[in-house]
Length: 226
Image (cartoon, rainbow, N blue to C red; front, side):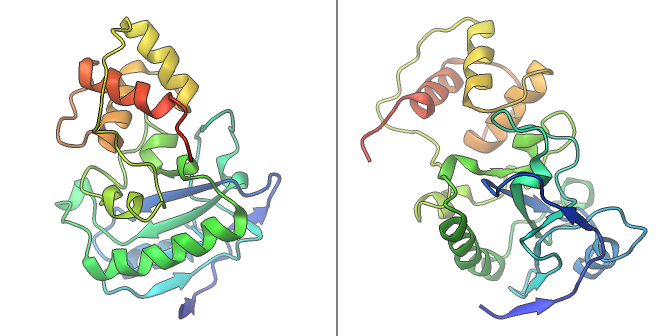
């Protein structure tokens, strides 16, 4: 893969081994504006990689270093997600600026990059997440238009369960316990449910716990033969 090196000064020392990949959208009008911010000493943010809409892949921070992309976040017991993750930004203006679909060239560039990182660090599919998964109270990227199924069919993300679904009829509090067990921060229950829906049922994002949400979460938690 051809990487364009555009070094960012915004990084630090890792305190944990890499076990997570976090996908973001840039949420700015242009890719150049996003790169300028991530590479500015005053920007206060960075990522390891940024993928333009035309498929160009920029490396901003070496994977050995801790980039500043996750902010205050949590996933499966880890509170310093920056230390434990590789961050990939995809250029997309996001919900604030119209939120167009992700470009085919962009996803075509993401797939081999993601596969390489996943293989080198031995990362499980369940730890390839969106920014909204790790910070449900603050973030909604990469959003409901992100093509998770394209990654899932290549075993680069968990698929959304669709077959043999069974509603366990948990109470709402039981659902939240299960969601926390799966990995989410459930401090704000509605935000956590919305994040789960955005990731696993993007066609209906209403924050309401229903039978489909319960059935999908149960399927995600059940062990499966490899």
